[in-house]
Image (cartoon, rainbow, N blue to C red; front, side, top):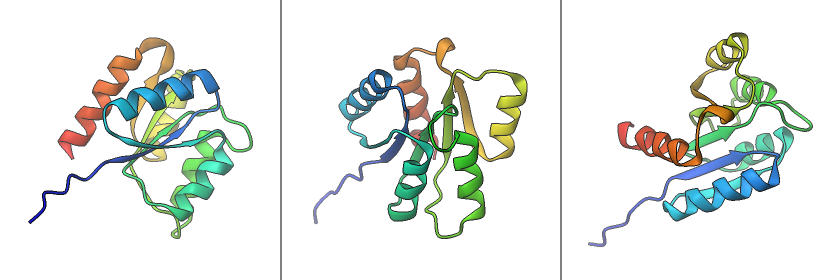
Length: 129
């Protein structure tokens, strides 16, 4: 009997190339499988094709905002639904509330969180599932 370790798959939706690549490398170092999308429309396309275990979603994105991506997830039963954690520079109370109303399980403001803290939060999320 082989002991197969499942690898959690994360969809990283981030349009800023430097931050996206840094996060992707850091997550891969922690043995997560990372699929990257650079805009909201690409994220929706991926979610229609492939199940993931977690979505790390920026809000300010080209083509479709993160909020629009979440609205699409909520309204399209053909999409693979995964928990969404928002990572954004939008930190107004109304933005956080909207993210929570749309189903986000976490909302982190980029300027207030280091990459190491974010990785730690992601690990906590998977260990508490």
